[in-house]
Image (cartoon, rainbow, N blue to C red; front, side, top):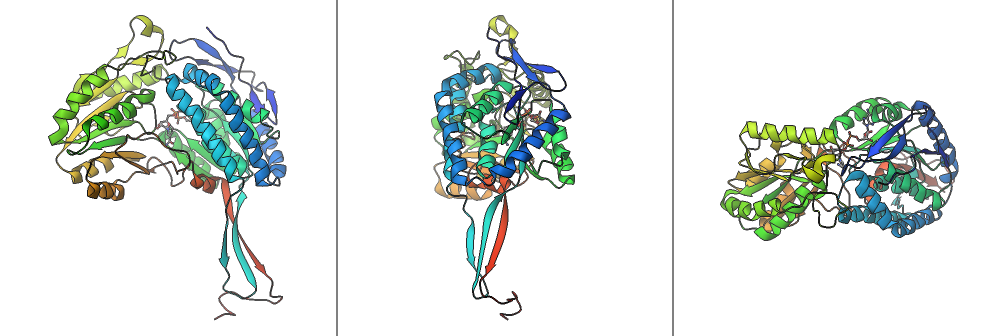
Length: 496
Ligand SMILES: NC(=O)c1ccc[n+]([C@@H]2O[C@H](COP(=O)([O-])OP(=O)(O)OC[C@H]3O[C@@H](n4cnc5c(N)ncnc54)[C@H](O)[C@@H]3O)[C@@H](O)[C@H]2O)c1
């Protein structure tokens, strides 16, 4: 059993004990072993971090962006060197299988490379003025101090989506990682430190959401809150931080569907369904938890899908033979099982799974059997609410139009996918699916870092992580007019 050093706060470039003197524990979900402890901070720790961030930002914003980017280049390099070590730690802490953990670290590397390039872009716009001898432009300015609140399911990737663009744009960051995944947060902060990021530009305050996270929402020294997590928490954050006139960027839950039309390549669709529904044990915001299939293809699809789900091997993600790791904790297991029981009561047909795994090696971890329901109706709660586990509901529809209606008939709007060979329906689906991300002939997961990431309705509030779009969260548009005519020129008046 491996026990890690306690995760201390990283404030103003120093690793510090929490002023509360309290610590929480983090546990390996594969076997229940305690991996270590993390600083259970209070509002005083946050105050100190915000002070350090404000001080550091005053100097950091004046560093030319291409120079700031050099730190990001070194971040990318260090992450590359540590990819395997970080991936193993991620599997131990969060549970996803090692192959996926490597993919997640790669996502952070890609984001560091991409945002390092942004140091030489951060494009603004120049526009002709309506008046002679006058120049007009808009430039991106940093916002100030960015508060980042992240979930446990992508402990380094999501932190990279938010911290790297914030930092390259000239902001300082105060980051509160999820309680369940402090090790990856500490490791990422160490990478920033070793990459030569000036003290105070990135600060990490470990702590409970309702304590440290809550205090961030009203802290006068924080200008922006960038949050990823559940819709319930996001709604609370929007109402509290919004009342303090902070910019709030929210990436929240999903209830993503894969639509399979009768003309689809069913083998390809099944590969994608298995990957998107059961990868990361269904604990991705983009996980497919619904399949909408044209009735003519339902039987054939289920005949191919069921044996594939039954063949999934569940276990410790460090074992290369395992496809599906544990879920994050006991509360997640209980929530998943609650929904499965609800599905049974609602009249869905359980084809496989539907139970906790607790015998033998499974006894000490948090395991749920990959679960497949058929005969699900769109209004059932298992087809409407985010379960966040390895549970998939298959629904049959009679037409393309009905498939689109069912896809859109949930409160979330993150990712949708459609399998068909009909190009006309591809373009109609691109137009009519109401999610922020649409995949054609691929599953609902697999976002690339240089494109906007996020969703509509209860998934988001109009902002996006990743790609150029992320910069809109972390920069302020500043419009500048330079009049070189030497006289007073009045827009709308002197030229009309
Ligand atoms: N759309 C996306 O980009 C995306 C990506 C990954 C996960 N998610 C969503 O995240 C959820 C799973 O993550 P989770 O269980 O960690 O979510 P969560 O909302 O419980 O917690 C997320 C973060 O918010 C903090 N928090 C909790 N209460 C708070 C409060 N009162 N004030 C401020 N912060 C508070 C937590 O400590 C944690 O750091 C799922 O709903 C999933 O769909 C969304």
